[in-house]
Image (tube, rainbow over all chains, first blue to last red; front, side, top):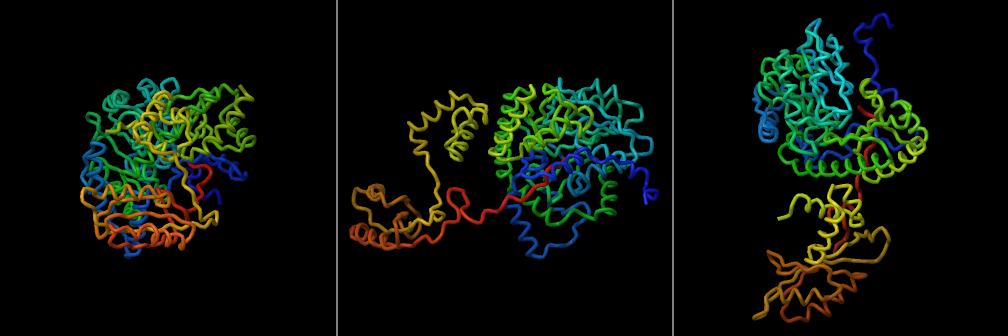
Length: 386
Length: 165
């Protein structure tokens, strides 16, 4: 049946994570540091509000853009916590996870012949979604010597005149890097000079452990050039609910909403209701989780450095991205041997793009006991090799 | 006012008082020296009163019952509720003493081996006191949650996929 497939769809490469997932899934008693989601359950107030809503029979479609109560509350929340002002009526769209927002953004903005600048390493969906939308993907390497902060020189090297979009994702998956206001200003200038639109995926912004997160849309002249993508999955531990949102200029959001209307109709109502409750009363539960992540982050960085690995300090998300070249192994060799020898699953850095080679991604969304045990086993593994 | 650092330190200690200053240092970025000094100071100032263990006796099938005894008392001249409360707190059987708003004045948590023992304690030690006007004793049948810890039915951690992007 292969000749029936669209070349665009069949040309899509399987995510680099997939191969490793298949390998790890065959083994028992593995401690996995490979998970990109919180280990907390969604705060009880939010779960309870969704249960109550279901009991009350709130099981219908919502408006395409999402419940207006949720958009209003979100608009207030964004103004208060992120300094962003978007109208709930026409500049906000509630999506099925931030992933849907990313897909919609590419489909709304890409015309044949357009190119997209995507940082490497980065979250696996950007490249795939951009390609499906028919874009040429141009990867921009992020470098360890800059703590994986995007540099204008690297953007310039990758830039071609057909570039229309730039994807930014800070705090970053897989590196845990953040970019503060001063780091972002030159990027904003580059964006203006080259008339780009930015898809800024800030899903991890609440997990910023030093200083304040800077929303890219808040930089001078960037509001109308930015699609601000966010969601509830990480900060409110809601991955399985699939609930995210995107904010931006009305002209873009309205067309995104139209595609969303044809393909999705609306995000699930119970997820919207739980998210609304989170905005109203989930702040303290969220803060507790952030505090706990910070504690684990410090345990991880300390443990990895103690075993002799170079590990830059990740100040966001819930990942560390140590350099494993001292072991003489490639990322994939390291991850495979570690899994077979010590039953610890990590994700090879090159699964997120070629510039991730020489690193592994370790998530610290685990209990401190699990982290300590994993660090012990990793230390034993590394000590045999350096 | 507590600083953010100190709030964090107290939080960690109240979650797990076995953490060493070195471990807390790794987890917070505070120096072990600061942590030592601060906890010593808190102990001295009676901010930290005790490092304790929360035991689920039901799991051990140990006989142990707790009653909540509410008291209406008549404070004596020149001896307010504090004086009466201080008298109660000396009894080792009485684990907690609270001054309450509402219908009763004082509320005690009394622990004993069985109901009979507690009944005995109430009739021998409490009832005869002439400043006690009425008592209301209720036995705790089961403890579901205490000090933020769920005792039973704690949901099993749902399984996450081994590797996700």
